[in-house]
Image (cartoon, rainbow, N blue to C red; front, side, top):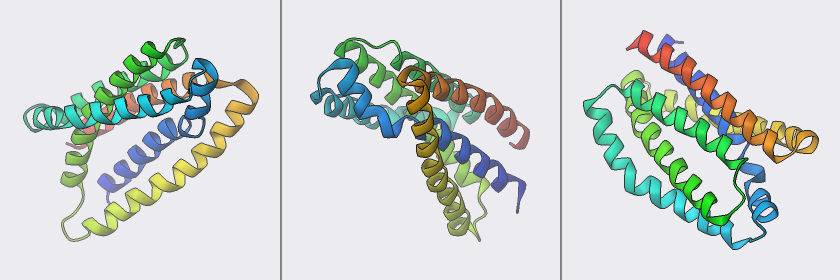
Length: 182
């Protein structure tokens, strides 16, 4: 297997672990901490609308600037977002965190997808994307099991801190490896 594909599999694994531990308990967290189940839908909407509005902007920037810099910025913002969840105590704070989360995602994703397109071979692109998707799906499943253990024994705050620290560490590793290949 080519070195570039191994890098992309590592990247996908790290992304899925850091994000996957949050998914299973996000709705419970919002309802329990903020006592308003409607905020689940509002926060979800704010996140996706922010991603949709800002992705083209960051995609254009990734075409003109260093992609690894955008990946680093997006990863660092994701770290801040994960830690911020543990500090939220009001609805407005959650919505601000979701705007930041949307910006982080929009900053990271276009640069990462463009990089993926560059690193996969034209001949085997479908297969290589299939491998990348496969590692992502399997890792999200593993992350859900890990999240259950963390939530059960340590609670919400540790879940967010775990995710944030892992995102930050993985972003540093990924940026260094990406710069070494491109």
